Image (cartoon, rainbow, N blue to C red; front, side, top):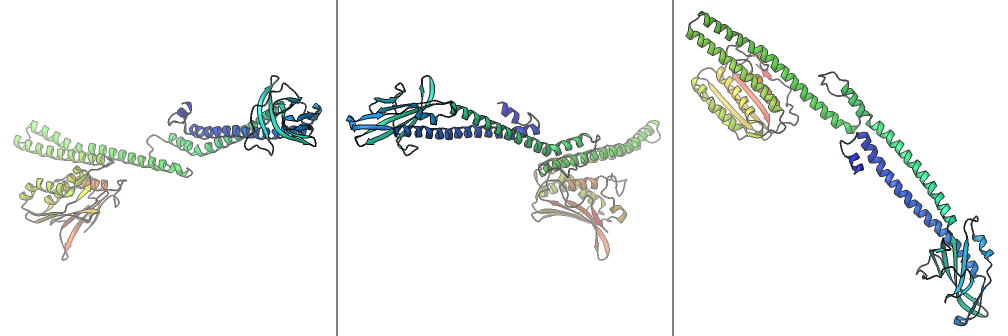
Length: 489
């Protein structure tokens, strides 16, 4: 649970999690490897000393003699204990032997050495009938080798059982030395790995700390993109995402500042006019009916201005939505045309509309506001009794909306600023926000909008408003064309 707590996200720093995530498995592996190596060394050590025990048993077997055959055989041994001194190492261990017949009768050696009760393995480790086992003799741990030695002479033949036991002091001392040496080497290895990992992790996480210091050192309100050319590739997605968020925040702040600035500037004028009109009516400077009529016109213009400014703010709000619904543009366009039909009838326009089924990824309000502003402008500027056509087509990837009127068109000076807020062609009939709202909507949907004077036969015959929207807007929300509109006379 402790290790899991350390490795869980948020428990500690990234550097500590990296260190623990690397060093803990390496330490466990080195520990397991140390234990395995120690066991293998002990096995090799036992094999070497067991070979010595077997040599001792064979040396004793060479000094045996027999008289008689099989059950009547009499086994004789003349083995001085000094014969085993050559196999005792550094006077640390002590060896004992016992020679007996198959029936267990002691012929020579230590009679109290425990009798062998085992059996010879099917595949003994040496080319001899030998068995090795651990036992206790005279309250000491011993390693015993049992050799079944055939004994033959001119006078007889039999089988002898030779047991040679050795105390474990030398084996234990050597095993302890091997263990200490192995632990020392593995400890040095772990220390080297730990130092290397700490150094590498320190260098690897240095760009993260540097990035953190750069962010902390920034002035309040500084949303400029992060620049970390030395950062590793693994950090680039985080830096790019952070820069994208900063860009969105910078855009939002700029939009909010502009909205507050424009709102305070544009609403001041109609409110001042309204105050003057009310004061004039109270003083009796104008007739009450005329005063109310002027006040009503001012309120209507102020309300229209407020609604359009709120529409601009709503466009920015909808722009931030990650998933836009799929909307039938043709149905929205026909609904707007039906709502504006009284204006069309009032101006006696020859109105025609042609639409193809066009489903695009956009909010219904955005498409409705776009269609309403463009169509309302066309109706307002079209001469009475003239022709006005609306055409909506799609090629599967883009949707193209074209609104054609037979109005006076636009001049070059106005075309350069027509899509800027509060740049109305006629300040008496508009606030200058309609086309700005259209531009913001089109930009949010990744499309383009242009106003083109239509020239036929060398003369100006009207204005074409053309909007192109992708069926699915780009993920970044960036328009296909740079912000703004292109117009030509």
